[in-house]
Length: 268
Image (cartoon, rainbow, N blue to C red):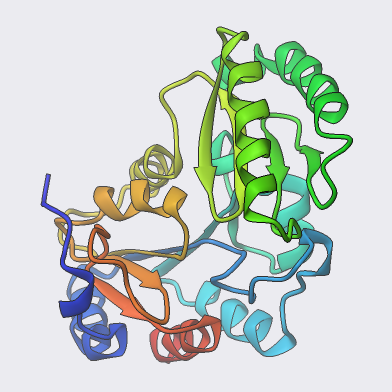
């Protein structure tokens, strides 16, 4: 496993486009996987406010139509949610960090994770109760995961209270585990699966040659699992105005607008 890159020394992803396109031409294959929130769309105050801009949908469609390029969107959102918000045919959609996937020739649900549904429903109900008095915090039941959002919590002390209530509660459920992202605590089935595992599964399903580029673009802590998977292929791209020093990504983009520019270049 390659060691994480120093975020301050990362090249801009557009500097690597020619190399990625040349490698695709040689291998006649490429996999481009992307997060949704903060990557294809800007971060918004509530998940329901996120919408894919028409120009982004257009360039995704152009990329999908290339016979040498597979496109996937791997999101923490539920599968139906991210598929509806993106709305581009031919893409492989992976929801709940890849616990469920659907696309051309693919209909996947993680079997062990599905067994945790009753525990997830129970913990969602309990979280609603214990967080009711914390203004700005709310619980989203996504079927195979549960997310506690606190982006709209204005007091840092309240953020600490959210974590202090959520983590001990979830620890009482042996089939569940907590992970943290940007202003969220996520409750997931306690299975060995994340965006990195999902990306590996998709690359294997696509029979991607070792020499073919495998790119993953994301902006959050949960995307680091995928960055580590593609580190040897130099394919991890973090979206951040200032890349963190401990990222496993190999390149960076400043914003979702930059991501669109990258997709335009790859679709050309």
